[in-house]
Amino acid sequence: MRKLILLVFLFTAYNSTAQFHGAVGTIGTSAMYKDSSVFVGWASNCIVTRGYQDIAIISGGYATVGVDSNGTRKASVNPVVSLGDGGSAILTFTSPITNGAGYDFAVFENSFSDVFLELAFVEVSSDGINYFRFPCTSNTQTLTQIGPFDNTGDATKLNNLAGKYRANYGTPFDLNELQSIIGLDINNITHVKVIDVVGNINTPFATYDKNSNPINDPYPTAFGSGGFDLDAVGVIHQLAVGLAEVELLSNSVMIYPNPSAERIHIQTYKIEIKALILSDANGRVIVETIDNTIYLKDLDAGLYFLKIMTAEGLSITKKVIKN
Image 1 (cartoon, rainbow, N blue to C red):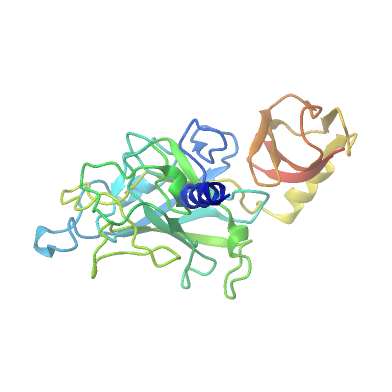
Image 2: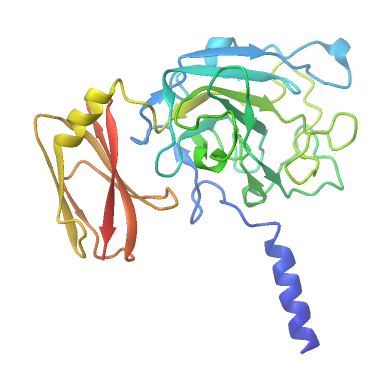
């Protein structure tokens, strides 16, 4: 019995540090590819405040690689812009980001592998003045400093930190996590701020997760491309051009039968569909297609969300019930 209790304890302790989404290609990953049709827009403006190449040696100057506008447009279209230690970028959009079913936007970095990860905090604002941070977790070890060319390690130990996925795969964020914050309208996010995690595990330069753990990532990166290398911010849910467009789209789409055990059909009127994306309640994409018939028979019973995107860039999300 004592051995069994010890094994259970060790198993629980091990899993407490490996509890989040894994790297690109692993089962259950939340990584979002840049060409996915879930993205309806990209940042249109970017203002960077550079950090030092090494925050402990300010005479070394600031990060230099890239220009502010590199943070705009689709991922991999522009070169990156390097933020430096503790540097930040504020991004804005042609239409505000809004809270929808599942993830709402994703941040892209340019890591060359699944284990060399440079991380960043992510904050949002609905007025451009007051910013609120996604509560993040880093269960990476803090006994030994990760060197400038060492691997950060396991993505399953990181949550709500931009940069946990390699180049061309965005780290997604769900505005619903911030729904109870006074002073933030999660249905009208006008600004996204990306702030480099310094990576130093020692005071006074350490930066911390929600549990007051120092976040360990490559340090020092005392060169022009030091710090988080911002590639892009992709939008998944955004406010439509106007209520009239939303009403028109809603009235132009019919889903039947709903609820259904086997399949649903999507019938449209005078609109061109760019993509149909069926997701589960956690925002995981189940089906992505342009076919107007989606088969449900292999899915568990429950609530799903069908995102309908038009060639004009409008989108609505409708509930689908599998019985």
